[in-house]
Image (tube, rainbow, N blue to C red; front, side, top):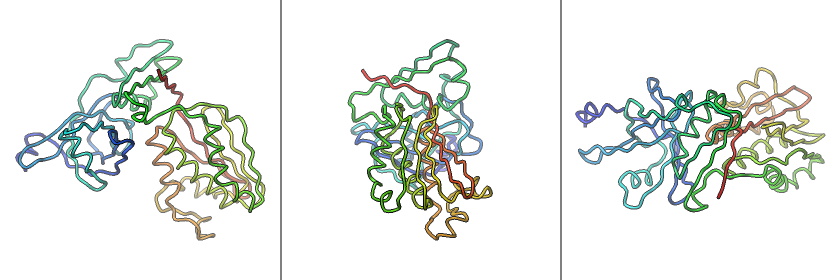
Length: 306
């Protein structure tokens, strides 16, 4: 085992999470060594030991260059050795990562122009998702279009989503809570299409909506789009300045959570993690006694389906 490690120059990393999107498509995240530097668009070799044999394949990172983890997509192939391993993989398992990234398809090789069209099929979307997190890419063109082709609709993780439909679906779910608390809800300027994973974005929105209802005693909520940001604004008790910067920390419940004893300190932490995996940014503005605004920023990406 040690001889193989020396020969192949890999490090042992831990699997953080595994998401099975369809029977044939999954994404997963592993820990990242501090000395593993890569450029968006590059790929890494991942592997495992099968007896004395080292099995490895190349996979493009979908995560941003500056994250403390490495995320990947994988297509599961019937009877594939790596596919079989991935299919059984769970959080906490070990995965081998070769020490140096590979590949020359990076942002620096993309020419300057007015409109940049990124074409991808299947899991080939992976390097583009990483590139979209790189500010340099957005300086290459006035407009960036991502075209993703798959064999079957079920294989499509990211889809075009109408924001208004998404929000109305969630508000209907919580309608009884609004009525019981006597709170209003004002929806406006939501006629916007975004590219996201609907299932996971709903998880984030539900957590934010639940928090707003929990800490709002009078007035109500206002939900609207402002540019590329979805804003969820409430007239609740607000958050202390000293707590605003820490609300996304794992286990941090803050003054409000301690006061009401209704917070586990995991909701917003998970919301931020999920948002990051989706390529979205989330931030909070708040003032004690006046309320809170949660902003989810979406990248300006178009999804073309043909």
